[in-house]
Length: 153
Length: 200
Image (cartoon, rainbow over all chains, first blue to last red; front, side, top):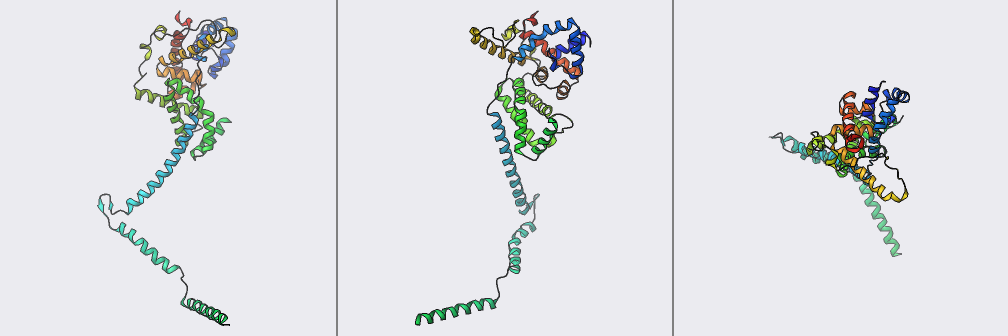
């Protein structure tokens, strides 16, 4: 450290040592203790730091809430956009016009989907056998006879 | 240690964790807002930029590389670039505004006398002291706004924000020597505007 470098340092970073670059701080502090000229430089330039330090920025009270509101909106918008994207992609894929040409097989597939679903459900879901239906009818008939006899007695 | 926990929080923010975002907001909001207010000189526009900085943290957290820079530096970088964009869009302060404000007389600034600010000499002059302090705050803001944007940004980062010279140089995409030159020229002009010493 020499007087030239010390002056450059103070002119750039100010008179407070905590603002000096780490690489120069230790050497500058030793230089300041040893050299009277260094103290004079500090005294000469101190007032600017005092003036700058007097400036205070008031913090907005709503800013934090505004930002949190914004990000929640962003999250909702993104979810809606993703859902809309998926729906519109499917809709366009099913439409008969793809890339400007007429394509019939896509809407045909779309129209077949309910038919195929019905066939599948019809083959898989059990509706009960005719024997079971007959047994239920017989039971109801017997119960009807019993209640008729009870009323006559 | 702080950087490690911040990096972990940013990872959570990338997965859209709002609690992690809130923590980072509490840690960095006031600092970033002070930077933008001093840079822009208008609280309402500065707050818009601060909001945008944190929206970018929310939407682009996955692009933050903790091994490359501290989160504070990354956020200052975004804020600095947004401020520069703001000036470009508004076509203001791009040229060296020192041509507009040549002397402290043209700005009607009151130079600092021997007495340090913030120290009242007696209870009786407190209202005058408060008024003087308010005027002083206003003068500093006004003087900062006369600086070219790069000099202003360098001074705000190194004087007010506690950003290291290497980080500030990285944010401004200049060498450390060039940053020191920006700081010296900026401070010299502020000294002329704000202190009686600067007149001589």
